[in-house]
Length: 441
Image (cartoon, rainbow, N blue to C red; front, side, top):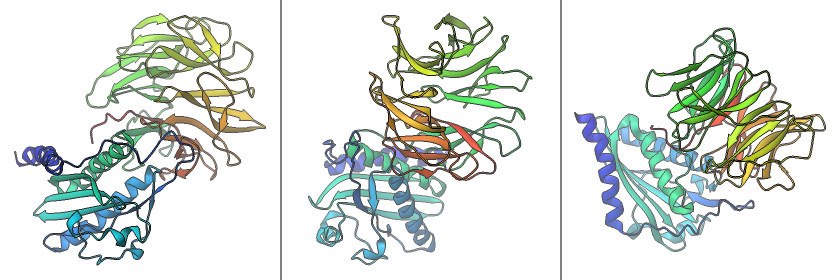
């Protein structure tokens, strides 16, 4: 009963603090996520203020402030300032505007300031968090949270979501997860981690070959191919319940892709003799055939409105990306540069497609406008880079790369900057797929 009360109080206290200040902004004037030359905002995050000074609060003050810094820095929007340059007592920071000398922060280059206060009692923690514009000397967002000590990561991420919403108009990536393949156990299995690589957990234990993880648009289902029965069957599994479906037809059953907003998906079957794309219900029943051409048609990806589908076809002789419009029935070729373009992934904004392309013997990640034009190369001269997948807000792309030898998972901004490894696990990791921001923490 106590746990339910604490969980509910997180939401209630959050609303109270926002309503009390009346200063939360909805101007979105700070960060333009569509700007390829985005300037990182200098941000200061001092240690949080301790209410009682207990040992538990001292440790949590540092942990929470560090977690806040790491989480926001991961977005690529911010330049975190060194705490050694802060002009304040690190053990007695001020957290409210009336007591803050904003010139001390503008003087070291901070344009945004996040302050926090912490109270720990038994196993329950209360956090009061605020973000200020230091030049305008105003509060942008303020929240209060209450929960168990183990919930501090969830509280920090909730506040980070408020920060990004205030600055961009988008809730960001903090409730999303990434599925990927890893062979660290000796078999290719699906793992799931949080958006920043935290807490990777094995999802399948088939002790066989597992391929092509794909999220449903509500992030509650995964579809994938597995050879657990000796041939490539298609599986649909719920993340929350022990239920799902198995599609067991002749030939290949690969590269599933969920239709946005409905419990349907596209997948590739070869029971007709050729590899073609079919539309299925979420329970695995075939609704209709979507492609019908000479040469394989594989790797579907849907536009956000579900009215168009990009896919890979060899109908022109080499693997290229095509777009099918369901309103008109027309199919148009999208990629023309290079003779090997695969693994398309449609952006959440609907205007671009990321894909893997081969040129000069190297595989790299490219982005192209859905209306055509010249592709933009995002990776280069660092091994094989492939399997791009967009973050739910379109600001980041996760991909696999062999730049350090074995294939590992990396993340970068949508413009190719800030490329870094996501996580470290035994063996190789590849085929990442980023979920929508609908996964409960």
